[in-house]
Amino acid sequence: MRVLKLMSLTFAALLLGGCGYNTIQTQDEAVKAGWSEVLNQYQRRADLVPNLVNVVKGYADQEKAVLLGVTEARAKVGTIQATPALINDEAAFKKFQSAQGELSSALKSLLAVSENYPNLKSDQNFRDLQAQLEGTENRITVARNRYIASVQEYNTTIRKFPVNLTAMVFKYATKPNFAVENEAALAKPPVVDFGATPATPPAR
Image 1 (tube, rainbow, N blue to C red):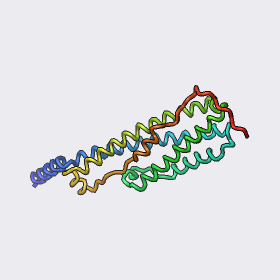
Image 2: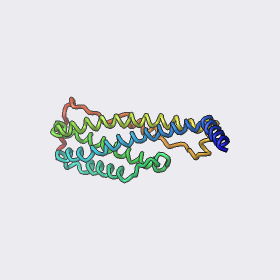
Image 3: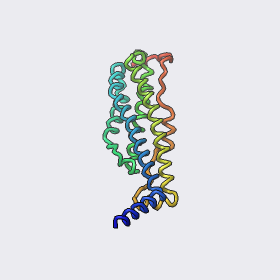
Image 4: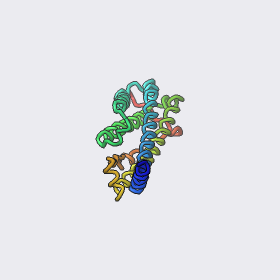
């Protein structure tokens, strides 16, 4: 009896291995790892926002609409539960993607406004935060590109025969991915240019 059980388990292991089960596991874990890094970099950016807003407020408090836009965009990002399950829910993934896109746009508006305030641009805290933001945006782009590649590999694998049969049996479905248009937008992160000639503050 023990011999039969052992033979059955060995046969099952060989069958699953030949049908791509192990490959699915490996690639699924790669997707999860890639997603964790994306979240880590997005959180790094979100943590920079309060300090950045406070520094700008000290020099340009009259830019209330822009400051409020950044604060609200960050709050919206914070309301989304970015759990591991999110990468298996296309609707939730799109909502997360949209919220992060809004924060990206709000931050670009904030940096654009700072060009009108020479004293703000020369503030060391602002310069440091701006440099950190640029570095974080670059890390986000790298993390997202790695995630995109891992999802493409995983999705391609579970669509191929005979692995698609294994995927169906164990209920592995394709995962949502970042859209091309979002990658195009991220390809132009906020630029730190400390050598530019300060603009004249607008008349108030």
